[in-house]
Length: 106
Image 1: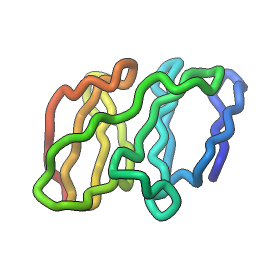
Image 2 (image 1 turned 120 degrees about the vertical axis):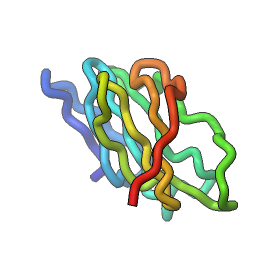
Image 3 (image 1 turned 60 degrees about the horizontal axis):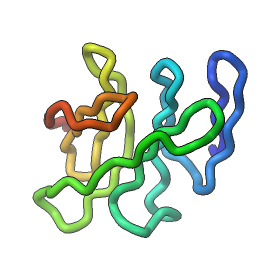
């Protein structure tokens, strides 16, 4: 998947293939396939309806050397959960990318 259509009809096209993308109000958060996005482990970006980058996930120290993100999910209170390859979940405010907490998943 290289495109995303907002509920209101706007379509944006991504530079890299996407594992998954979810809409949070006027923002879509995309988790890019790390096989194509190999710059670093910061393979999660948020976009507005015009396709402009709203924010990019910051580098977060993790237990393992390589921890790309593999999935985005909806969390409580309207937050986004960014799941990495080691099972850590970084909970962020979808409009700003601010880290709100950390969790763990299987």
